[in-house]
Image 1 (cartoon, rainbow over the protein chains, first blue to last red):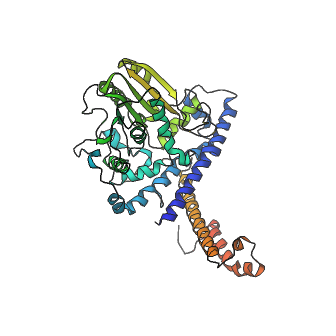
Image 2: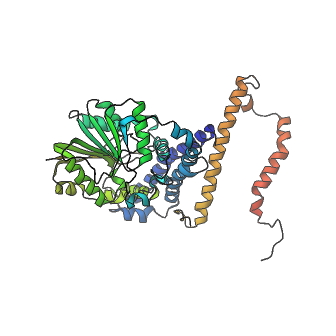
Image 3: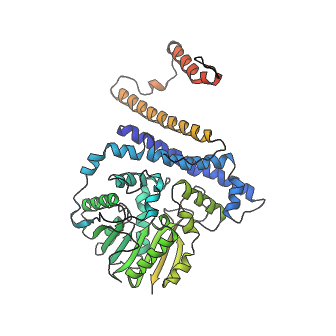
Length: 348
Length: 90
């Protein structure tokens, strides 16, 4: 496919997604409010009983599923586009120098390989160009942000920087380094280690860091549940959009590993999705997880995170809503949005 | 064997048919984009006046396109008649 057709098709799909985000979601929410005024549901299952069979909800759900499917897999999808350009893309990767360490013997966990997250065919490590596919796809993950998509990661970094610059940072589940980049940019004196299961994503991340001439970051292929770092070697352990991709048992193990890696007083902070307790928000979020091939969104939302973290010995446990851009209503947005939240805790 | 796609409508045929509609809609936008680019370059080269193609066509031009319009409408809607184009039994 030619470049122009790819861009035109992807732009069209994004416009359709924006319409879904504002108009279709808005109409669904209005329908819910109208129906809930008579008898307010207390549970997501009751919202499903109220809306699930309506024509509007069926189209809402269909579009959420299939606009994403077209984005990745249609004639003008991200996967075929990048596959056609495979050799040139791989040849264009910058020499990572000492910034990349892959582990060809790494066994990926079953939960990770069983589902193609985001409807990305083969998943984020299924082929050598998967990092490029993921990177391109991530530019429109939050449809209303547009060109400001990078700001989101910087905003998270700024929150963490507010209490002073960390000197040893571990970024778990770093993917192609979108979350890591603001750390090595914002904290040039810090030593940043970034780990992920996906070799193709890490290769792209290290290439980007090499082009940035970053001297303080290293990307390593490793499972965040069992790293090879020494005890108490970090003062910040973080992740962005990682924990909702893991089953609860693995989330708990990753917290325990973070606890082991943190120095006393060190901070763990995860930027992720946690819907409000309000049943419509949960119904929408659980459906999103199903339709976007992210089966652990719901279990995460139903976890007792405070209890788990306290049980592991963390203190100063906080779960705060996160505004991905200025002016966002984190409580009652008129348009569909991810229920961003920061989960933060400190090692005693 | 390929896994079955998720369904959202009571009749799965609607799930699949709407997918065809979205694929065609995407293709239409790709064509509109290409046509717009072509018109802009033709205008830049002085081969058409800017806005010339957006003006209403004259009677002569409309008449010239009539046979093509008719054939397209017939081809698009003919399947709604449900008639056989070749003999079959049962």
